[in-house]
Image 1 (cartoon, rainbow, N blue to C red):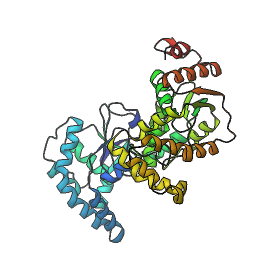
Image 2: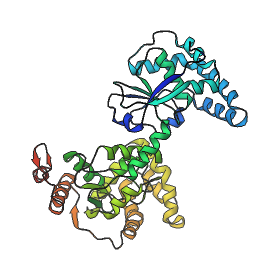
Image 3: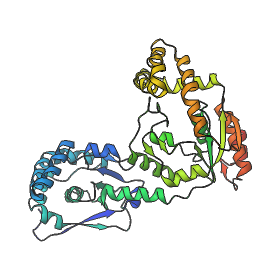
Amino acid sequence: MLSPTLHSVIPSLTAAQVLGAVDASVIDLRSPREFGEDHLPGAHNVPLFDDVGRVLIGTLYRQTTPDSAFEAARDLARKRIPELVDQIGRIAQWQPRCDPGADFEGLSERGLAQLDQALVAQELAEAPARAVVLHCWRGGLRSRSVAALLRRLGLDRAVCLAQGYKGYRAFVLDEIARWSAPPSVVLRGLTGVGKTLVLRELERVLPESTIDLEQLAGHRSSVLGMVGLEPCTQKTFESRLALRLRQGTGPVTVFEGESRKVGNVLIPASVWNALQAGINFELVAPIERRVQVLMEDYLATRSSREQLREQLPFLEGRMGASDWSGKLTGLLDAGRERELTALLLEHYYDPLYRHSERGRDYALTIDASDPARAAQHVLRAIERMHPAGGRKIAGQPLSNVAGSV
């Protein structure tokens, strides 16, 4: 048990150090709801309190006293600690050397103020091998006390994330804001031409040459863009985007043309500026091909079909309730999907897109009916406009890669 005068130094790492430590295990002690909103890449959610417990403690802290909130937290944690230590042990491939319950009592019995003073975070110069990084919202008592407990139980690799999730979040925003974009190419074209298919084919043959904003957002950037996908929060989008930027890009980066918002998430300024400054390539395809692409996107599964049906009344309202009410859903229910898709393109998506693209210049127009062949044309055009400076893929010059698509 800790002596009354002993201060425990809890090693901590910055967000940059944690993200750069390839063998670290990140343990997010926040509640499941907090974790679901956003978390560090690869983090494990091992909550000290569930969502209800977190709300209870927060309410007590605000409406009564910090000490009463601490006592409630202590009671909840007492029941949770054995399972929590076991979960962390499985992740870290480690076993405690003694009973965690007894050590927990020894740590927590001194009360809020004394425990807060006793557990002092100190940043390390570098991450230890196989670090077990614990964090809560802002690097407070939740993570420091669990780290202290684990270290007392023999897990010397247990450290804290400096400033917790809040510190990580600040790092992500700064990282995105400071990103310097290389020259960009933007694939544009009417809905259904297969812009995403071409983008992904480019990424397949030339890794790290693209940034797929729709994939990062879990949304196709249209009124029906969530169908069959899982849209994410703004914070998760920015975490995914920062991770993608961290992986690096080539001498030219290819985007798909987007509006400033992809679903409900906003594209950060540094990336939006790269999109706006990019050279535009127009992708085209016959209406039959576009209908087929959209049907494969939106009607691939039964659940996608159900999601689509839920959204169609909204679209009917946007197109004019007096003329369209019930017509789109009726076509879907009757199994007339091709007719439904063609009508949506003709009466909704195409007019909207042409209005948004009015006055835009295109450096090149490419038939996207065959995504692999279209990717070949894109690569060759990029090399003509932006010489790759000797960049090679699997030992081949970029021109050879384009020729083998």
